[in-house]
Image (cartoon, rainbow, N blue to C red; front, side):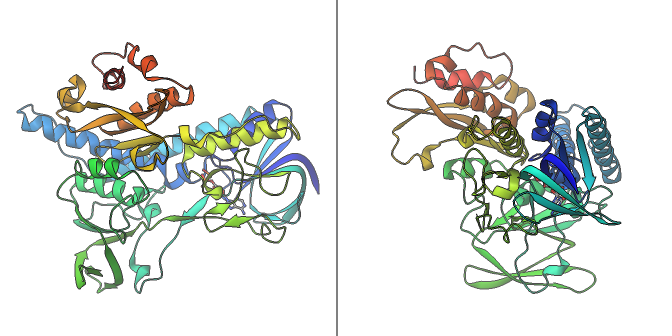
Length: 457
Ligand code: ADP
């Protein structure tokens, strides 16, 4: 048995930034991960590979648009080369992470599966044997995994890892793609594969896609997506058949059974938390969404924290990073809580083409708060005009009593970047006048942030 200060279950975004912080403070830390590498699902099959393909798809669409203006640019993309580049980006980041790890002498990464024994003991099963660790503190950062509904023929579907993992099974752009699920993974994949040439049909069970997000935001975003993507909502998939040549997905739509044929069916019906073995045995409280924590990231057991996707609060890599730092700071401050996660200031971006991004409180979830809004439409934005991408807008929401920024969303050009500045302003407690007085750089779309604030002050 080895004694350590802190053990993390998982070595993804919910674990390693905090582990680095603890190691810098002189703690002995062991991270255990079944993958044996840092960065979890984000790098192995999530954000990094999907955004690598996405940015190439964005470039391709821009090239096609410029070509339509009579400017000759290359509009051909070889998908096998796209995969090569995606794999190279992933490999480069794995190499970078292993160099980062070597900087911390008190930090070890063990390849294995962690099983919780009691509040302080974890058994790690490696390929060759099992080893027990005794830790003062535990950080559970075991992430999430794709969850599939029990539909007849679901085994004929791929999931996002078949597209985004290293050396993926999907090696060419399917002529026709059916996507089950209108969450962010389904929509992003629909957008990029439509840009690469697939005819995409997306089936969503709920009456609208992104059903848990602000309605105005979602309708603004959907109106800008490639109209060749057929999005059918309130569509309930009943079964999938594979006859060896094509896959037929049957679904009930408007009370009638319909069928769509495709070469690939992607199941993007959501993710569920990965609960490590032994967590239930020691009484860690959880719901279907994940392990229950407060904003200090502590579970119901004092020395055990749960960060990242596994707590279900905000299953995004950057949220996991912030959560792992909060857990580390609270471990370092002992029984006194010194740091909290402010969930409202963590932005969410949907990387469709164009993208959409949200932070804080928006019109449809502002129960009890009277809001005033500032708008900026990209129609008149110089950068949007340069790219010919003038659809969409920035919307900022302020508390009517205090003029304090409480939230915002962006649909259209540079959404994922713009939301960063809005989130920073929100977390720093900016008022409308603070934003209105910024000299946002010309000719960048961020000019719209101060312009939107100037609408109301
Ligand atoms: P997060 O962003 O929330 O940290 P990730 O999915 O990026 O989530 O990382 C979680 C990591 O935890 C994954 O690499 C996964 O393989 C690993 N993992 C899950 N369960 C266990 C376990 N019982 N023991 C060790 N590693 C685990």
